[in-house]
Length: 449
Image 1 (spheres, rainbow, N blue to C red):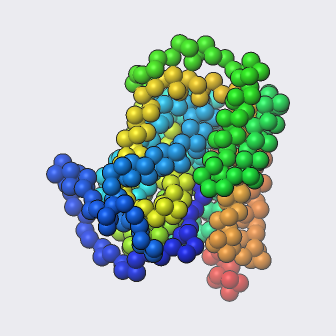
Image 2: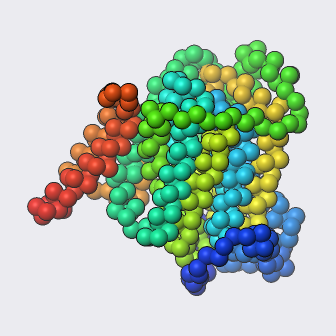
Image 3: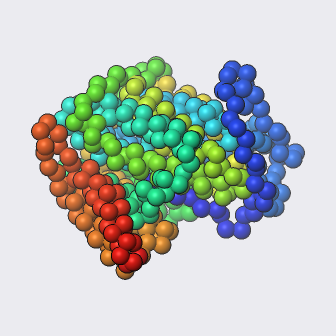
């Protein structure tokens, strides 16, 4: 959910790559994508240089960077299925497949990993409570199809209308609502196992405070591991499912069913995925020094198709990952070869049901501790979008829209019309988008902006 920035002190190429028309992606074109130029001697990166998207280090070093990308995405990607109850190995499988699809469709121009999106947590929980996992998957599929359609529109018309529809005050508010709306779920899990919840939450905080580098970036997952191990030592982890699970097998696939009432719950997620993808592509463009505006629509479409594919088989929706962008900023290696290795590696890891059973047996108290930290962090990311977008809350329009939407979303003010129930997140999203445009237009016409 976070947006990456260029590491201070790192130089990027000054030339802007020319925009070229996309060529059809056939088998021959796909095979040509799987070739990369060797950067220098392939063993080192000179001061001020970067390994570009079409370059690579030696294969052992490239594989090492690929493993770093797997480690970076691992914690967040697995948290979503653990919290929602989706099969973890299935989600990991479609994460890897989605990443390879993304790289192929963007023709290796946008180095990104597609992991589980936290924006799906609230609608999946609501849809599962009313109709089960298959109904929730239907919402994931429709979300992906809408996002893919948005990508096609952006390819034709450009990104300007998205910036108009989703200014920072609106995007930040929606992201904050999605995180803080889950406060009740975090509380319920926490009070169901308070001892483990406290241990997990304290572990997350201490790991984040004392660690540096990679460990600090996965402090939530590391804290979850601590809570899990303590619960296991206390005898609070059921191991029956772990013992019965096979070491190697295909992931469990589930077909979606479609319920219009549940699908409505997922519509705000589309807006968050648009904001995430656009922000991440811009971050990659800044780091690589390449003009990626022509790839914005393709990136949205590719993430939409990856999300659709995941929902069709039982995985959670995907998004480009800031964690992996952070790895690129730290290593100065933007080679898409490393991402192909990460995607293939994720698929390989997904073929162990026993591994998935270990994750699925996570005690509820540990989930509560994680929820307190994670859902709060998502909310704070909304505030970060406000800050980075320099939102002026002395402006009454910005203040009223953000304040009203937050109360509606956090308190989950819902209303029912016929067979449809509009949740607090839906209503808050409508207030943020429609309300902002109406009030902004009025204020502008009266010369108040």
